Length: 384
Image 1 (cartoon, helix red, strand yellow):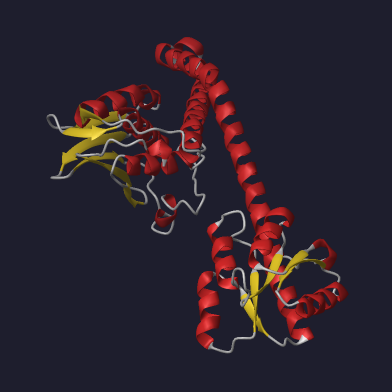
Image 2 (cartoon, rainbow, N blue to C red; image 1 turned 180 degrees about the horizontal axis):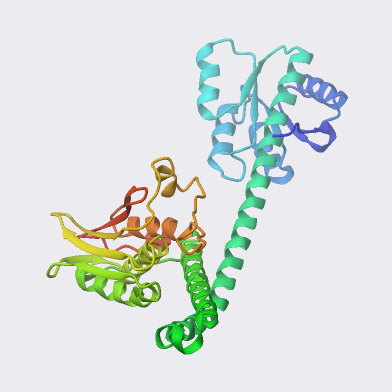
């Protein structure tokens, strides 16, 4: 953090002592250092001044007749509005237990009476600096939070407004790609059609992922559990992506046994499958194959999507599921990726009581596996 330039005249100090000469001395010393000074001669008056003046620091005597400094400090720290005001005890007590008691109650520091002028000013300046630094950090945090919230809202609006028209365009390209052949429209036109289909597919996927990811980040994504046959859900979600695979002439095979009952959010599982299928297609060669399999364990169902494409190097594998690293590679048709899909898959998998893992060998393909807990608590995870 950059050095904070302090102007003592911008800070108000409350000096509390029941002895008039001590108050006069404190006022003289601190005024000479250009601080704004307000005073109180007892604990009750001190609390009233804190409420009306909002001082930046309090110099507080311990021994006072109406309310001692310990009780004043206890009340200050019990109130969220005053709990963060630094308090320096002014004490003639030399018993370490009394000083420790003050620290336990939340005092920031203490100065012994009779106090040394330079020591007093140094300690006051130090705690004023810390208070100013804390204010700066809080202001920067609030500003950053506002920026993040504005960004997420913008992402959500963009993704929501574009998703519908891009979805329609995607369906048009899908149908054209399936119904027209090279022989009918020529190699050049077919190549352009294929390119348009790839672009709309990836754009729609990005917008859909962005919308879901934003909802997850701002706490508006609810997890709704229902008991289903995970095999049926996986098969349905995979078939929906079959059209994308067919455009690239990729064969999708299934190793899915009978019913496996789990409690999960069906929409989230479909989103995970769509992303994993998209990745498998992206990194498979023309005429390749993809294997979808489902297995059952005593506590989970495990769903795997395996491709036999270009795979991932041993060096890059750890980067793939690391949220701290933005890692993407081009597909076999130079398809671009955002890296957002796998991050979303990890989040959605965790929300369903499982985890996402990957195994890969460069040149041989990759296998992504996500698990779903058979028993999930009925919770609204969007409200976390």
